[in-house]
Image (cartoon, rainbow, N blue to C red; front, side, top):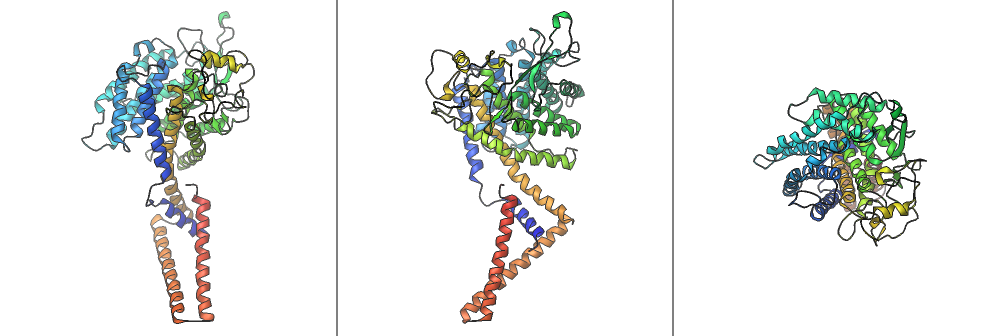
Length: 546
């Protein structure tokens, strides 16, 4: 059989629905549901509509994860999705909204993203649930209104006086133009343009997103490895200085993550492929950072600087979940309505399929940190019960940097920083019980990793196979229907030939045929068997990982 036709048959076979579902997606779904259950039953208080042990901004991130859970489970477990939407409604009233309005601009922007995620959840439920089902559509305007209110406050942080533009971090402190506040502003602006319905597609938001992105990419905020550093100070501010000239070289996972959803949104809104290319380059920079100064991946696992030393604050424990959430958003399939070039869509799809190995490892290594209560720890890859590790002093912070986010501001003194994070007294337990221990923030990171695997598994396993089949049609250089007819004719002929050969061989055995005739029958059968085995091997090589 011709090799090209063999490839095509394998592609067609891979595109067909299987008779039984693979156990892996069901396992991931069960793990994800269990993790969401743990987050809500152990940490959420329905009466107050809050996660009492979280702080204001991490609560907004938890609300984002909860909205995403409701959307993700809408078709697989509608009752559970309804329950999580009800808890999201409780959180709407329990959120410390008035307090948040007086906080830093990044804290305010987390709220915008929280309720834009909720709006998207409602839209998804309206689109997929049967007519007559409760979709929560009556809450769409309420969620959108909170996003709008907080966006209007945050927009005041844009400042053209210092550094030729950009968002300042806080209205209450010395001006600091950091990566996360500007990335959040871009993501919130494009999110308002795409998803805020009152009015829909307000181009002011799109302009804000484009302007902020242009400022960020020209600000020299990235290091030699392509990772976003923490931000810029103005060194001689009191003497009238206005330029960002003192860069904090510290890198965090969330600084690389939030921008991904912004870039995806910009590509969707403008049909400009440069945003997809930029997003893929940023993800690759994270994955390739292992072994370098400032690495964010250790042993193939997403790792925060504070994880090995056990000194992560509530901030640091939240960061990896943020990265995984926005990576999931970036890798959602580009819709057919998008006018991006087919080559760009293909590059996006294949790259995101390639990231599945990294995502799968993140989800698995987060799961093994679960304690007896099902709560996941912050240092992924460290099995529950492990008491010591030679890597607990591992430090790749850029020289001279201080980890302000995790309150470890001097040269790394892991034990002192870890002890400072302990809520009270000495804590005995495994490596993920050090410092703050297992918290709702650390657990939410694992939850986001599981969701990333669940969502990307579902879309990649189906779409990649069918897309490969379609690409084979184009390779043959014929129309789809002509190629399909050719395949069916050849397949039918091959099946007929196999039937004839097998029938002849059996007939020969029954008749007691000997010598040359019988030998030829076996020869043909063996030849056909070798041919089939060759097709199988081709299929394994091209499609076996899917």
